[in-house]
Image (cartoon, rainbow, N blue to C red; front, side, top):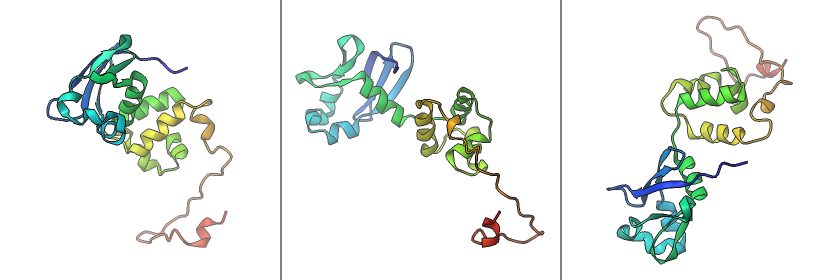
Amino acid sequence: MEELRRIRSVSAVRGKPYTMRVAWQNGTKATVDMTGVVHRLSAFKPLRDPAAFRKARVIADGLGIGWDGGLDYSARSLRLLAEEQCTLSGADLVEFERRAGLTTREPAQIFDVAPRTASYRRSDCLPRCLLQHAAFLAQRPGGARRLLPSSRPPARQTPQRKGSRVNPRDPALSRQ
């Protein structure tokens, strides 16, 4: 079951229109860019005035934020938006591996990328596609481990002579 997060405080970020700093009651914080919400949804048209947008306040005991005129945005929607925009590091991928009980090579198999790509685990910023995939898998029954290609035979290694190149379209390489 999804955790219900309540908002403790909200404030507009000075110099960045339509961006909020959100402090959650569990102690976590996020910066959320609401530009898309304000400009795509006609109901939020009054908030295109940055002065009106800055008047956001916590409502309903932390279950949302609201503005004058009855406009509101739920805490759940705000949390989802914050998670979509958040940047994660290699340490977060390591935590995903730990929670899913994966070895360091298994994420490469799950994400269907070269092991070198999964080495982003040491970087400060991961490719968004890996983050979204990991977040999706973490929420599914059975998690990531059920997607391991355990029935697939290992790729055959072809010896190379020094200085030679391998043609990936060579039909001899695809036979087993």
